[in-house]
Image (cartoon, rainbow, N blue to C red; front, top):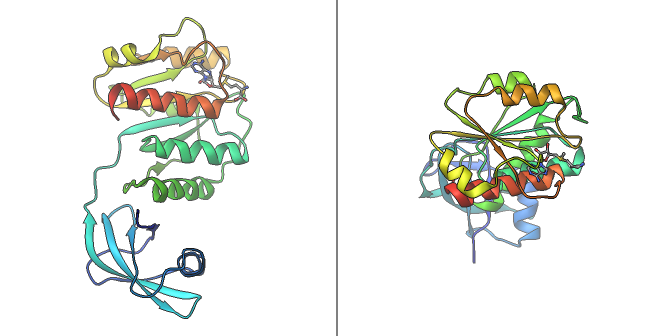
Length: 239
Ligand code: SAM
């Protein structure tokens, strides 16, 4: 049995009382059928995870009282995940899976074949929170506004190894290549539905700390490639 986890923005400390939004109260009282005195876990991305007691007022309003610290706040994962935004549900999926798979920074990049030009960052954040609630992460990923590909690459620290997921058949196969290239922090780059064009590939290939990684012989959908790439990183490096 795992306790339900809820994200809240307010500060968490012993004795703090957090008023819940209507949809959160409804979820706890009417969907999960919890009652006053039942406990859940709450986190805000800063103050660790707290055991909290529910204080219900009728069936529609509730607050939480923070009782004790269940887990201290860990450092945020240091994996930058660069991806060309996809449309609608595929982007929701991509953001949720990236958070579940350990991405610490979500950096949307705009490329020639990117099909989305204006991004709903609030929706991206809502998906990241949902994934964090679900999978036990306490540090919420940082969500950066979209940037052109070249600018996003230029903003990476020089020592960060860029893992460029490349469907070209001469890219290296993953586990041993990753283990050999590892030294310092990482970033993972996935292209858009249409792939990168030649000039974009040239910009990427200029980077000194670069590993061009194959995820196998088939061309994966961009959102599948995202999960596959991050799974390989986790399996090879434990991040
Ligand atoms: N048309 C499909 C779609 O709608 O998603 C295919 C997209 S594929 C070109 C998108 C990105 O996924 C590529 O730019 C690359 O980063 C990654 N990718 C796909 N298959 C891959 C593979 N076998 N190895 C490495 N990266 C791959």
